[in-house]
Image (tube, rainbow, N blue to C red; front, side, top):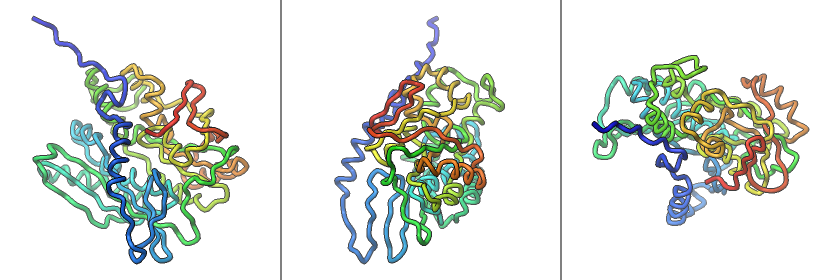
Length: 353
């Protein structure tokens, strides 16, 4: 009898089925085809191409809007029959993007696409949404549930978030970032909601039991991977008006390359990046992944980065500790040039995609 072969472990995100470069090319085509400018009576769009949220000026108010899904992390939730964590993710991933332009979240609308509506699943998602809303201090203003069995077999979960710029606050888009600025990192709570197509391939190839702990882990690996995204919106809102804050970056899909969404004509040297938590190293060893793949796909222990004036960094670190981020630390600096560097790993990224 022929022996059953283990499935081969993909060594890149693209090989697992998520090609970010192809997505970028397709998105450029979509944006070119959809180009339209609304009349002034419907608000004025503030240009922030490639940024984390769209901005619209309506009267004297500036509104921000963003949308995202939890992605294939819902398939891990389905395996474990735990839905609260991804419900919380649906809020956090979006309010964190609002925070990246300095906007304060005000409301969320959720979207659930599914083959069939299971009350227990919806209740779990709802409990997670409530936790996320409480953390972000915003409201659930509605949503959409669609039964589309011909398209979705399980559950697809996402949300759209709306925020606003408080009086006197301008959008923080990173345009003022200059050489000499410091980069402050806020710790992540795990993988958040990124890279799970690759993660699931690694788990399957390694035949990893989700109910067991990894070496050095404190809880079953399935629960560790499912940990919800940390919400940064309240922390960032508390320091957004402080002198010296010039850029805000949510380290989500694309890893450290997200810094290039602020100013691509600056060099971000991450020469004080902390050793990533053990979960990341375990995944890297499990799949034989390169450092470039890890730092270009996952948050590697830092879920949000603030670019600040170098002289203001000590004061802002103290302030961050007061408002809920005692672990905040310097992770790098801004230099002349372009790209993102992690010198300890010999890495250099020249683009976001």
